[in-house]
Length: 138
Image (cartoon, rainbow, N blue to C red; front, side, top):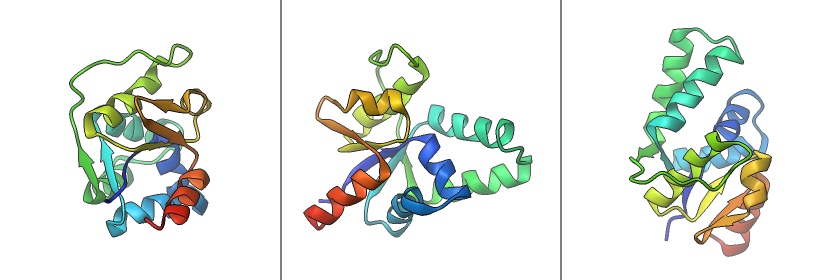
């Protein structure tokens, strides 16, 4: 069975600018070895952060979002989940994971990582997720 995951914005941004384990996760999505799900809210956050924090222009952001769309599967969460009180904006990743029946959320965000698991969905750092894949030969 192909692993089904949601990638947090910080992992995707790290993959773009710094590579490492986050890029390995993204590349698994590009290759089709894992299924990566996203939502409109996640895409909007990615666009906003690329412009505001990294100063990319509209054309650069459009190219990145186009690339993102080539290997992600959009879902529309049907319910709001309020589980992360310290940073309610992070709830969108859990909502997307529930809607897509994901097995994992891959994140570097402490609020999500502190949750560890929600309804059987494991929340892991990129390196931890890669280790699980290797261990299970997925």
